[in-house]
Length: 205
Image 1 (tube, helix red, strand yellow):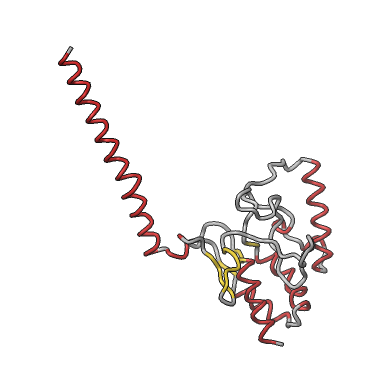
Image 2 (image 1 turned 120 degrees about the vertical axis):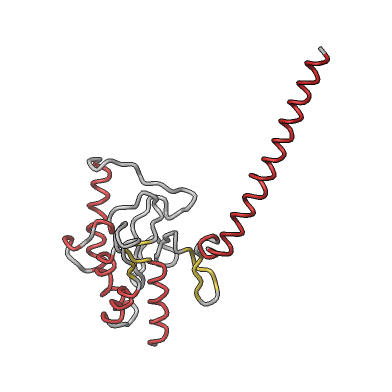
């Protein structure tokens, strides 16, 4: 009986020591190491890829946002618009609508969006790219295709009293190619592009 109790005690003490060691290693040392490496080598990404303009934070290059007229849910013609978002670009509510391609609700939503985007940008419906009328899987995609940016150039230029050539150059300057040259598609970050539009419009007044 005494031998059994002693053995149990030793095992319990060994288990407790292992728990303490693993708690310190995985709960303290490892997180500190990862945080340190992140802050030292990838500070921008580790802190959320925050974008600043005029000395203040205006968003993250990783999260899309709405570009509406103040106090409304209508798109502002001065800015490039992002992809539709069923969550309102809420980073705490990511995910697509999960509607199938043949779902009548999705079909009607896409048809309505197609008409709205075409009319808003003054282009034929045939020129509207699919990312202009369909949301991303995350619902917070901050990028649009160069094709979607291109059909918005004339509208943005007119609304900001800029030339089409000036705005098209901004789009070209803010178009990123495929990741590592082969993954994904060329894309444009809407937030960074709109900041550039704002800066150019301010200097052109």
